[in-house]
Each structure stands twice: as C-alpha cells, then as structure tokens.
Image (cartoon, rainbow, N blue to C red; front, side, top):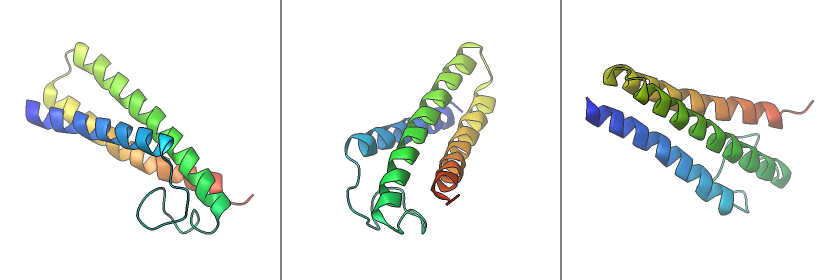
Length: 109
C-alpha cells in the first residue's frame, strides 16, 4: 500500500514540477505539443498567452495545496489506503479545476 501512496504523491509532484517548468519556460507560440491546448485557447495568441499563464498558476497553487493537505493527513495518521484515494482524487480534481476555471476565464463575457 505504501507504493500506491508514493506513486500518488509523485504524480502531484510531477504536476507541480510541470507547472513550474511551464511558468518559467512558457510556450511562446501556439502549438500542438506543449502548453494549455484547447480549441478556445488556440483561437489567437492573446487567448494562448492568457490560458497558459492562468492555468499554470492555478496548477501550481492547487498542487501545493494538495501536497500540504496530504502532509497534514499523513501526520494525522490517516490510513494509507484512504490517503492514497484522497491523493488520487486530488489529482483528478486539480486537472478538472484547471480546465474548468481556465475555460471560464477565456470565455467572452
């Protein structure tokens, strides 16, 4: 069970690391390989820049929050299997939240 927890925490760390890399080395041109890529974000360069900046910041904040919450739960001696499920759910919620909030930000008023 410890292996599942380690894998789940590593996934959050990878999410955080990806966010930091994209923050300091953002994609400068619209492309199909790197960055926040949705139909709306790729419509024009302004949307592209806004979407990438906004989504990266959100991804970093949510990853840090999730890792902090996991640390608290770990020290509260939450059962490892339960903690693994929580970490997995946090990863999914983080991904869905980044997409939902970024698309809302890009949506014309």
